[in-house]
Image 1 (cartoon, rainbow, N blue to C red):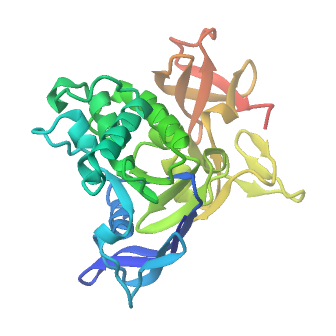
Image 2: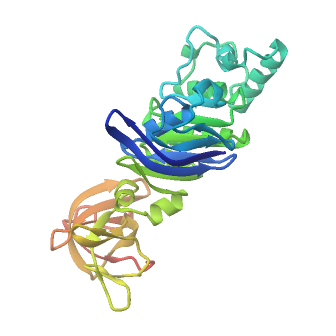
Length: 336
């Protein structure tokens, strides 16, 4: 179990992470998601023991490993690491890479554990190969097996799929999740890719400007963003002006939204979040100019401009005959 309690981190006079709290239960996979520079990797390094805390504390398995008064060194924290570039030893075979952290075990036990790890990650019979003979996805699995082999209480992964082809990342993320669940591992990953985060994690934490804006499952983070930062970073969509009605609903240029619909107080007044699936093309509605069309495989996403200049997005069926049009009529989805 991992608990981060009101942790702040920084370099010199610059605060990088401010008052962050989160918890990972045993066997849970978490992910810190956010743009570059938001503080997520610095927080991961502090959990690993590579950065001291400025305030707060970090507990692992119920014991404090970092606070103003205490700093347990990285090698004593019982933590495994998977790095961006896999960091495999090129002069060691796959089996020897996996067994690198098992030097205190007797040779027969070490060999048995390496074989167990090879089977866990689906690389049976490859123990004698060299890292350069493997694909990127296979190297990723070797790095994961090496980190899991000593049975760490926590596994940390820093952008583990960034070196893989974009087309491979989500499928590899699902594979890694299955491996971690089979191993009953507790893990925390850092990424800027929300598809990876949603494919991997039980809970996702969205960071912005050094703060943890929201911690919850993928559905909560996507459907009910806690802040404007989360709404704008996660998924597609647009923030549009809204006025509160006497009945507590939100009046927008496209119609009424329920009181509980995600809304935020901004410098421009109250704005509500409209995802592409919230907007539909209709025969009679509000006319909007089509600015961009993006093919998403199962559907199109139209980027639209309302008469007042407000931008919105709409999810459009492949069967709809709007591909070459310059404008469409739109309304709020009846499912809202």
